[in-house]
Image 1 (tube, one colour):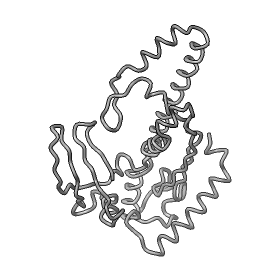
Image 2 (spheres, helix red, strand yellow):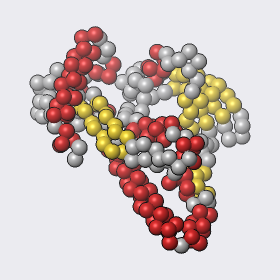
Image 3 (tube, helix red, strand yellow):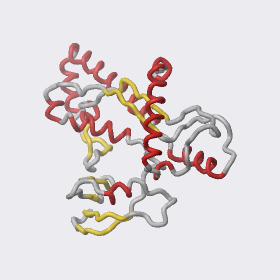
Length: 249
């Protein structure tokens, strides 16, 4: 089951009674180039408790969140649930590898309509997770500072530590994914760090007129194309492996 909504006001649920089917895959590939958006049956719960089931159209999130980094970070934290956190164990850090079909850098200028359209799609659909990465690392740093200060306070003034315990259990403005208000303590417990994020981009830095890249590659699943992409992916991965000192900076 997938759940999404408006900060707890309206909740939409999609069920996969028979697993992930073709209709679900099509909903993840629906760009503005399609003539009709795919529809899925959604169970919607409104603020007043009213529930209805109806078809809702879906458009892929390629324009805003083509790389689900935030979802990966949340799923990692959810895996180490409150039981683990309450036992005082820390959530392990992450190494993340992102493979992207849409390169951000290419040499040369497109000289025909097909390659021009393809380049526009690369710019529209490329990985946009760098800001999410910066935000996650910044938050981790703030949490690290908070823990350092907390340890110093506990070792020094117990009265201050006890007062802080009351303060961090107060309700704050931000909400969790269910729409419930968080406490200050929720921002600290269960946080983890990202050690490295490696981005492997398809055909990165190739000349646009020498590349065998095609327009509409997100919809092309022929055996030949898939085999070519697999081989290209191996070469790109080996390139990044051999130049690991550069991409870890």
